[in-house]
Image (tube, rainbow, N blue to C red):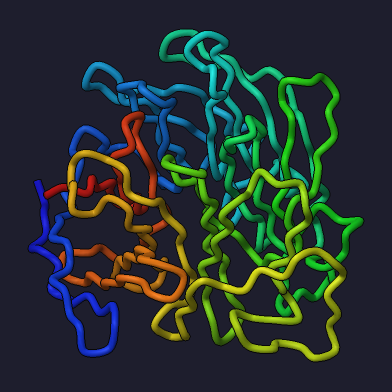
Length: 356
């Protein structure tokens, strides 16, 4: 079992004031060996099982100490590069209705696809496609996140259609579902996807804080200079949010020729410059029991660098921050939560649990 030494960084809040960073380790979960090209991990709330998404098109479940195939979608999935099976989400009433949802790029086209399935014990069955978004101009920037929000809707994060520099103009185009944060009412037959946020580039991972007002945190992958973390405190409100891409990259102007097309502009909470970060990986506000000292910290990382950062707001102007490098593996693809809020780190080679 591989583990890391404690955090070595200092935590800076106010000028001249330093705090010891929370100590934690990354402990490899041997029971999840064989999970494949893991790009996501999740579980229904309160469930003791773990569901691991393999980018190549398989979801595996750890149940009773064993790793089993939950559902095999390889015949439906176009995998490679940024494409593949990218996320899974469980209905808030999964314990009674057994409904789950997957996000993948469709075989033969690469179209972004949201589909529904049903679980019977440790096996899942494909039922139907709920939403298909044309994505054929370039293979990158597919987005990939599903999460149920505090409003009971299924939230979906899509990329801007690929290429570079918002080449196809989707991010600020309110007629397009690319470059957006979308809500879908899966409890109403035939319900249409509704745009909640525009102007994202590639929101690879976003999450809702389990506590309080269920604040939304988004890790949006940047272009050439900046990676960003966005935070919205009242995500269930219906007013349109605009995250600024491609007029802005991070807090800087990317293209003065681009125009914002409405909505309330959301400025990044924090940014990380290149090459310190190349492809940001959004995580979770830690609410687990494994490391009490981490509670309240939002954890995030980078796919091309070996670090984990944490940020916890103290008030409107001050934040506690740390950066951990010791014992952090390279190639982090995602964070994940188990049914009790403990946090895991996924890589193609292994899965780790954040522990004391």
